Image 1: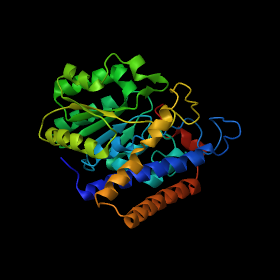
Image 2 (image 1 turned 60 degrees about the horizontal axis):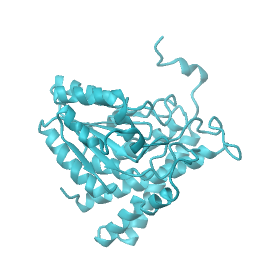
Image 3 (image 1 turned 90 degrees about the horizontal axis):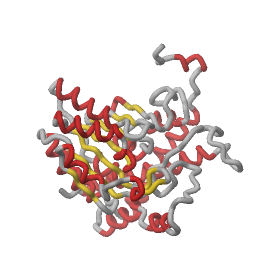
Image 4 (image 1 turned 45 degrees about the vertical axis):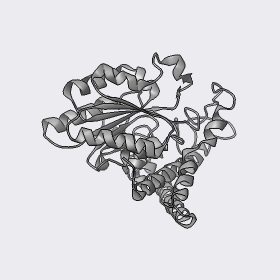
Length: 328
């Protein structure tokens, strides 16, 4: 299954948008945190996990989805949120803790919820997987259509919730596609040091579902593999697992010194940055021209700039609002 030129442009545009969004958020995040880095200072306190380098994993899968399909993600969610169509203004406002945010500023960047496009994410490792299974069980009981995509990092494949979620999806034959984004590092621990198998796609067999591995961090290759699986799922084929080779171009979080990386590794990954590589391919294939590329990038940047401005100008919640929507 090959993407059309229109689909390729959609994937490229979403990757460009996600990257510029994170570059812009990083600038805001670092305000007030220099010259001495303190995670609690500035307009965006707390941790910040960037997904730059992993954009192909989001667009190659989400290109096949409908607005009513369910997507859950994890603590590194921005690229998936952008690909699923989460409202940029409300997403940025949420990250900045503003009243106009997706959850009124209560969740922050690791807890983005947009029911209008059926997107959510969770900050605890592997905890986005059971809700994806639950969503499809609900659809099954109500005889409603749709599929769910559950994103995770490769470290989550060693958590109990991973095995529980895959087991139940297999038992109930639910249309859930589990996506393992393998960037080779679980915080500062390498996959080789933490995982008993070289690739997590082989674990799928233990739960009665197919497993697929896609190397290369290539949007078109991910699109092709995901398209076949999702098409089968829509016909009742049940769950599946995909492990996607990708790269984390920054640390686990902003401020991570990355001393654990072997010398030269990060530079080699940056040299293979998937966005300029994909743009080069699209230009070579005649899908993108220098003029259309500039226009696409300018439009994406304008959307992000408007979202950053919206977030900055939005009011903070009133102090008493902290008690709203809380179970007593």
